[in-house]
Length: 86
Image (cartoon, rainbow, N blue to C red; front, side):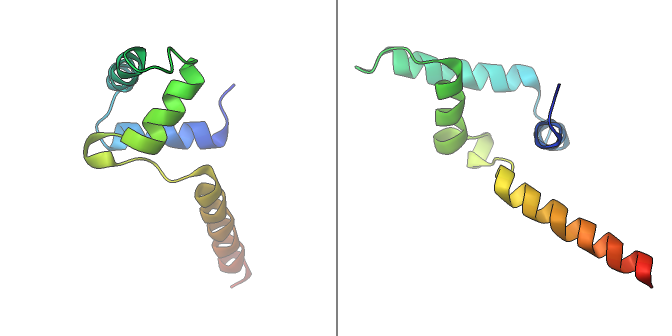
C-alpha cells in the first residue's frame, strides 16, 4: 500500500509530465553508469537514492523531501482548522 507521501510523489510526477516509464529509464541510466564504476552494481534502492539525490528529472527537478512535505501538510491542516473556527 502506498503512503500519502508516495502518492504525492506520483501526483507531482504526473503534474510535471513525467511517467513511470521515464523514471525507470532514468534509473537504468544510473545503473549503467554504476556498472562501469569500481563500486559494482548496487540495489535498486541505492540506485533510486543516487538518482534522487544527484540526478533528478530534467533540470535536476525533484519533488520536495518527505520532511518538507510533512511540514506543509501540518501547515495546511492548521490553516484548515483556523478556517473552521471563523
